[in-house]
Length: 203
Image 1 (cartoon, rainbow, N blue to C red):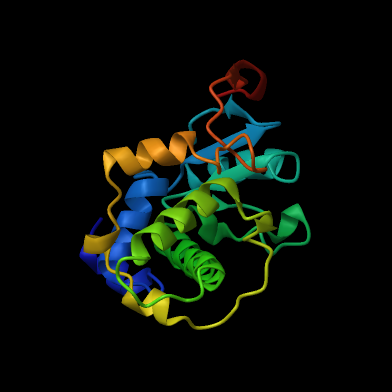
Image 2 (image 1 turned 45 degrees about the horizontal axis):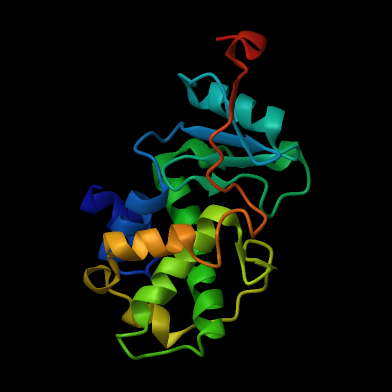
């Protein structure tokens, strides 16, 4: 990811390297990317060619399923009352990065509080990994991290550094088969069943 957009748009509480890894782990290179999951199943939707088309797809599915948008795959619908309240910034790269990193920083603080707000570098990788998992599923230890209150500033977040957080392949395997599998928490999971609605929704 371009360093200039991180400096200009990302939440300053996260170090640039952490922002870059966050987007690499959960995001998309396409600012117009829309992902829809209904009942734990991935729905194939038409690839939007404009911000307006992307927002139309979001409006069609938000409130009915889990909709993620843009370079951070931001959870559409968080903090809004009605579909008409959806911010157009969801499909703007800079605004999506700002919104996404602000929300992810809160998720990290929630996870860090559960760990006791550690400052030991040896504990930081699991905090980051669990925060990534919570972002993907929307839940951590049964708590909806997107709706939960922000616990406030955490020294753990200040200490996070991407060079310390990169999970190994064995750690990824442990997370796939561990106690917090996608089937044990509500959220988007990694469902393999896909339904192609492109013919129904049109180009």
